[in-house]
Length: 301
Ligand SMILES: O=C(O)CCC(=O)C(=O)O
Image 1 (tube, helix red, strand yellow):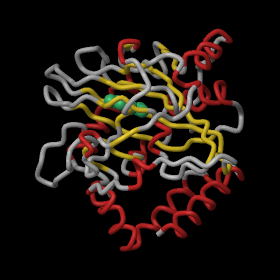
Image 2 (cartoon, rainbow, N blue to C red; image 1 turned 180 degrees about the horizontal axis):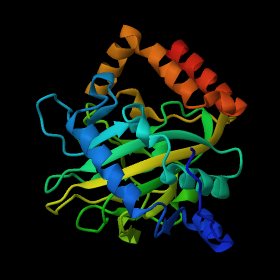
Image 3 (cartoon, protein in one colour; image 1 turned 60 degrees about the vertical axis):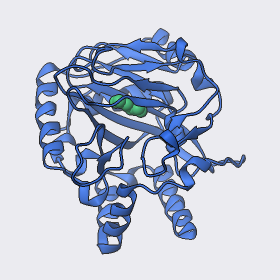
Image 4 (cartoon, rainbow, N blue to C red; image 1 turned 120 degrees about the vertical axis):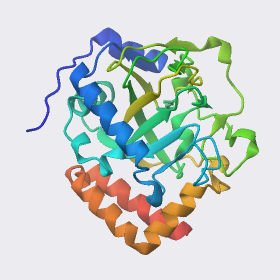
């Protein structure tokens, strides 16, 4: 049975999201579900799920096999834990995304992020849109970020710069100019002193748009900080205006290499199967975007 949604945003919340670029909600699922998700996350990170496919990696280090990661992430954890497919969180997140961006919205990506106890690194200031490998599309995306335990300033809650959602994508770079690091950091054009920290209870959520500048501090506590991010977007259309996200061109990360090797071994067919199972065919706009993106990637390789 599919989980049902029970979150309705007020007109004031919707207006505030579009004005400020973020929104804070005290609860988007039950404490029981949060407890279940914590167990799933701990299993996925401990078993290195997705690592061979390049889907689990350290965001801020060189991601060596034998090094303890400072900020491990799993892209699309649902691929390694089918029980994540049918959660109240997912149903509520989709309902929220539709209220904020409109009925055309489709699921686009998801992330599991861990800041390990005592050594979890800060997430650098960035805009999510800066990570898009193909800047020649128009993106209208948002992320729903749910902590699986309390999120505080001490363990790395989210912090946002209000209003940055209304500007362009600012110049980014690899932290320390090290192109072997997956993360990006925003290089200039904002004032970190304007940051609004957003502490949250477990199972609450912050929502931010693809251009809202954000970061999260290090985890200084003796408990892990886990966050489950669900991303949604209007199916992107080719943009009339050319942009250059040059900071993505030179990336040479270990996870990108693992992903390439896995695709060559037949992983590309697994990817197509996952997209079909995920329901990409239900939205003609989404399907068209996926085909256009694949063709552009083929042309570029
Ligand atoms: O969880 C974090 O530390 C950062 C999350 C983030 O940057 C995002 O969801 O876009």
